[in-house]
Image (tube, rainbow, N blue to C red):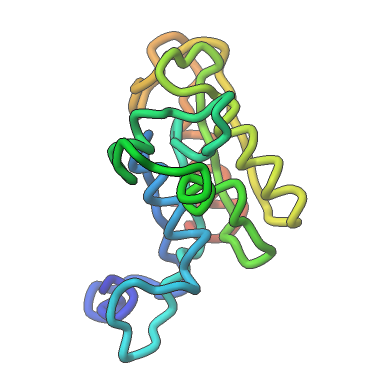
Length: 171
């Protein structure tokens, strides 16, 4: 919808990204890894691929050593199978066409292992997809736009990344 109406809203249709936090990060990463398998009507053949992704403490992996079982249960039901979880394991569906990605996580995230972001980042690199990963020592899960444990602002790092990749310009 955004891409189809971009001219009405004065948006560049080649600079549309997706952002998601936690389970929303899983949704965003799915949009960026499964865009070529549409589940919606797309009669105008508009590209469903985000131009970039921003994933903040995202649910990614179905690897039982690092996954968030509750998220996969809510997504797939209690009786989900390893095969079905693998289908929704974002790190297993990255290709050279996956959008460039900016990731943020805290190492002390007790709700969701930061290894989810690391696994996604490593898979991006293996597929030569531009990526940037910021792991904070502290912050836990759900710190939002400002991690109160550090004076570093990840949103400033994101803004720099967006400028570097020419999705936004100096203002």
